[in-house]
Length: 50
Image 1 (tube, rainbow, N blue to C red):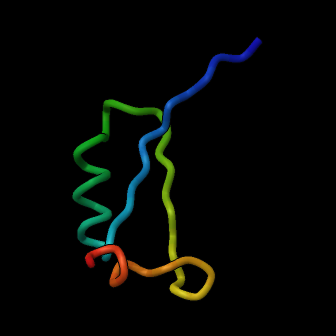
Image 2 (image 1 turned 90 degrees about the vertical axis):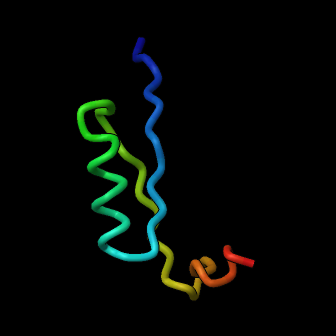
C-alpha cells in the first residue's frame, strides 16, 4: 500500500516569482505541483486580481 503525498502548489505570474516560491519551499517538500495557465483553456492571472 502506498502512502499519500501532499504537494504544495506554485502559482506565479512570472519567472522571478516562481523562483522565489521554489526557494522558499526547497528543503521542506519532495514534490511541487505547478499550474501553468495559457489564458485560453484556463484564465490567466489578470482575472485573479479582481
